[in-house]
Image (cartoon, rainbow, N blue to C red; front, side):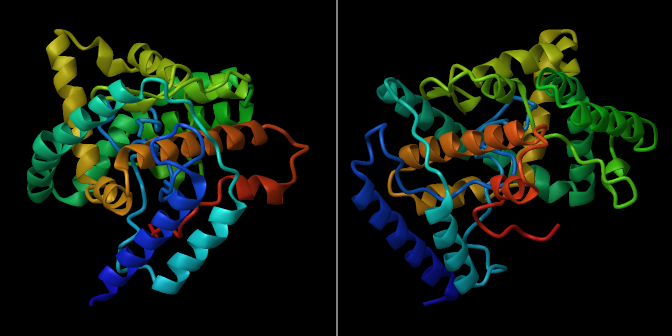
Amino acid sequence: MTKYHHIKSFLFLILLCVILTTGCAHSPGPSSATLPVAKSSPQPILLASTSEQSTAQSAVDAVNPLDDEYKEDELVDEYAKNAVQEERVEIADPLETVNRAMHQFNDKLYFWALKPVAQGYKAIVPEPARVSVKNFFSNLGFPARFLSCLLQADFSGVATETGRFTINTIWGIGGLLDPSAGKELDLQKQDTDLGQTLGVWGVGQGFYIVWPVFGPSSPRDSVSIVGDYFLYPVSYISPWYAGGGVKAYEEVNATSLRIGDYEALKDAAVDPYVAFRDAYAQYRFKKIKARKAKPNPSVPAAEKSSLVKPALPEKGD
């Protein structure tokens, strides 16, 4: 048996043990076994939102736990250590029947439409060009990130986003390049949205919702879907179907850069629906907790770094 299968089997046993000890997998109560989601985004399904939530942002950019680049011992040790240290979070799921139907719809839409198109696109367009396209659309998402930082009183984030937009628009050829993130300037994109802003203000997440096409969300985080629409310049392209085509192209391009992440999380889960639900709730909780700590100078630096520490080792850029 190859190393790949050893890792997959081991993770499957871990997931199964956690589920058996935490309760029924269909209960919206205790969290079921999932693989943690890395970076931005929560978005494991189709996400048309331009924020890094682009959920399921969104559980969307999950690390592939079966990548041969990771050593088996490092993967298991790191996962086990963080599984103990992480504060688990729950989310109510009174609409489970409807949500499961929407989850299945999004799943089929991904495998039958989005993934095949993204694979064909990936085969034709080289990666540097696709990264440049991603940078361009990310630069267009500046208004939503700027407003979110402002509403959170994160003035350092406001300055960073303003600097990034100015530099990338002028010297980055309209945002196709990202010179502001280089070592000389080190202006990193602020991974925040209006849903996180409400969370920082103390608004609870509410219950779990799976939107068609947009994917996992909650009443609070659905504000990002609406807010991004009005704050995103592409939404004002006329006629409406032209703007829709641009957004569809953006999603195809983004998916071509992360093919395999969604499949890895799904294959490792006993119940994919419960896995994505719990991963989404955990991901959003950690993001909001990190945003609350960021502008607070009384929070020790060591504690702040622990808030954003990934549950699994990430690939080198």
